[in-house]
Length: 387
Image (cartoon, rainbow, N blue to C red; front, side, top):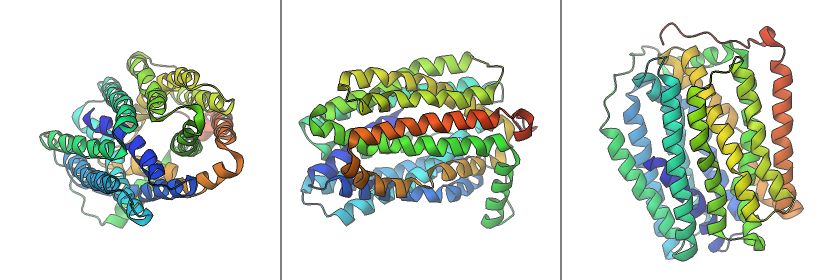
């Protein structure tokens, strides 16, 4: 929860800090692309997460995040920050994220049995949602009143606390891997490709991540800055999703749909609601209300999807499989971030938001059609004997 609170501070600090330094949509795109580029290193993070104690990998990632964001806070406080320096520091923070994200599901698999994992994943999602909710609402106030430099500093300090708490955990040492890193990568890719439903939904998630990034990182802040609100309003809008996720995680822990994969594939359609509302020129209050719905559905999706992965793959390969899923989903992110700003200048924030919403709907419909083939795409998943 502490780490996710810091994410809320970081999301607003980076966007508003870049804009207050005088850099427009193009500069914002460049900084965000630098932050996203290290996502391509997630496959390396997967190898690290399967070789070392996973709580130590997470603690190290938070420590690296702490250092990068304290530096961002210091540079923003000094004013006149050069764009290359901001990009470099954002890239360091992105590298830490590449270590953190694929390792977290592996930690849950280490600590819980197969029977307890749905509840554990739901609890993880709930604590993440509470943390993100606190961070987004608080950061909106901080950025609006005392500036983005303080929000960036808060992100760094919270990550320091998170790193300390994670370092106090005790988990078993990962099974020793005698093969080299390249062999580990190939084995992870082999596991990833064995189940078609995994890579089909990964393609869907790639499209959705693209749409969400355009909406949350570029279109949304620029729409607010164009007279529709301010950093505080955008913080409230962004807090709508984790608020809805609190309910969604409760439902996800208890709901056992008959067709798990098809249900999970349909849920992301709700992500389009706030995008289409913004595209229609809605007030920030309406957008905030509409943002709670995808919060509910995405929390359920997280529980269903993460539990399916944990039950389908052996624990010693889980982080590598997760990393292949994530790097495939985030592979286009640097290019998207580079082009989203200039595209917004060309078509406007509202049109970009509308396009993002339509992309979500198209990807969801296409995925359901393909998965509707049933056994031909390996729709069912089998529990790993090691879980």
